[in-house]
Amino acid sequence: MKNQTWKVYLAWILFTEAVGGLSGWLTREGTKYFNAAVTKPPFSPPGIVFPIVWAALYLLMGVGAARVYLTPGSRARSRSLFLYLLQLTFNFCWSVIFFTVRAYGAAFLWLVVLWFLILSMILSFREVDSLAGNLQIPYLIWVLFAGYLNAGVWALNR
Image 1: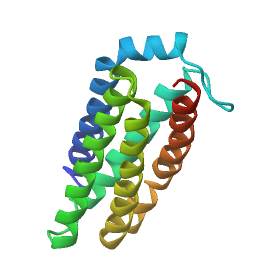
Image 2: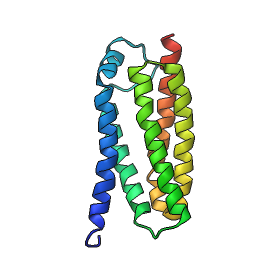
Image 3: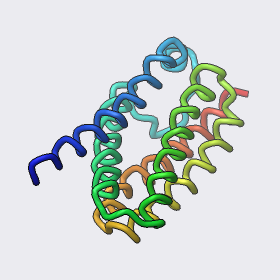
Image 4: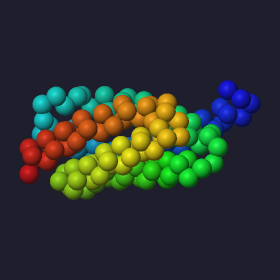
């Protein structure tokens, strides 16, 4: 990497991981309740899987955002970074809606919007840097799986 490029990667990764960490911290009591008292659908992974997967996904998100940020300024770059921040905000809010508010139906609808925002971000990232877009595919797949889990929790805990 160029002399200062690593700092850009580090900044985007730390920022993204911090958003995820703050979300986890704010919803920790709701997560405890969820793990102890909520009926979960089949194929629900053990609770320990979630922070591991999310840390890896936030890393990939941060790397992708850094790659986009490091490209020359353009409308596509600006749109991509806007979509990145928007989907990250939706991601953050979903945890609060799901774990703290326990509004599982609203959380599911929020997650559907998040999924489309992630897809839009991927397509936008690909216009700027194809690898940056492709790095987001595991995130899109995980959120699809999260949608299944969210819908299952909603159906089983009315």
